[in-house]
Length: 130
Image (cartoon, rainbow, N blue to C red; front, side):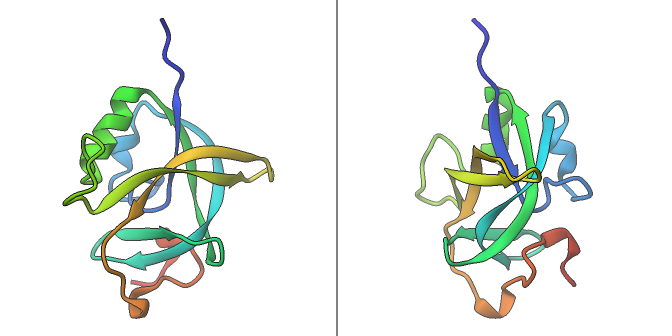
């Protein structure tokens, strides 16, 4: 039985041009897209907090198989669905595609503390000043 691919929205180092994009090998690029939230510089990587009153956050939508999704969960510090001790939680959210159509996709949301002085204006991690 064929398993349906899972859609994910990536907004940081997993995007094309990001330092961890190699982890997306084998995933199918679907579309550019955006979600609403706040994005912060955590360290050398970003953290996103979903917020309907937030900024437009830019990223990419990919379709991937459950095994790759599980591997990305481990990479994101989120394993076996346990939030305790995790930096992120994986949640479903609505993504607006480049063609204005909406899709539901998984996104890794930051659950740690945030610092407003580290908020990235413009909503685009890859085009933010260092």
